[in-house]
Length: 170
Picture 1 (cartoon, rainbow, N blue to C red):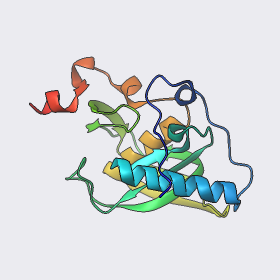
Picture 2 (cartoon, rainbow, N blue to C red):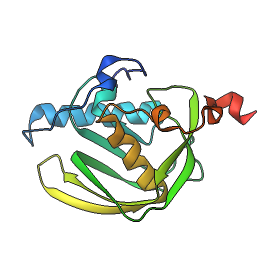
Picture 3 (cartoon, rainbow, N blue to C red):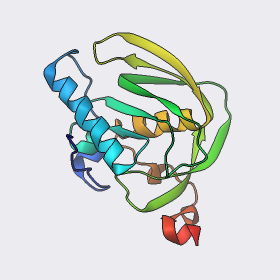
Picture 4 (cartoon, helix red, strand yellow):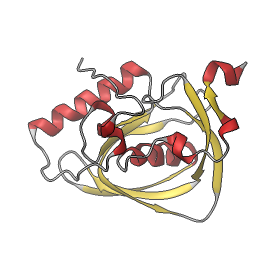
């Protein structure tokens, strides 16, 4: 296990734009991906971005079969996405509840594009692109936002739809 401490909202690294990965297939990149996946699993997340564990690189991992925090969500295949690009498909926006490992215990109603195409590189530097919709698309947008110094509360339109999960569920 290589679990790392998850930085919380307010930390300076989480407010920065992360740097592109320049070298693929390195031991350092491989270890970063192990640390990210282990941390995501231990914390019960569906995704995590490198800045959340203090590494300002454009790297995200995401995926799950089932998740207690999002019991209704369809599974998302485990994906390593490096130097990502997102293209939105259509104008359809959906508001759904989100949480974040860097904003523990809180939830907010966040508008996101329903469909998109994302592209980037694997750990070995192989380019790929995929299409996503619904929760899968939401996860991609949420994690990629971290690479630009954006946390989900910054996207909430109405702060009455933001609070501690246990209070909102009551």
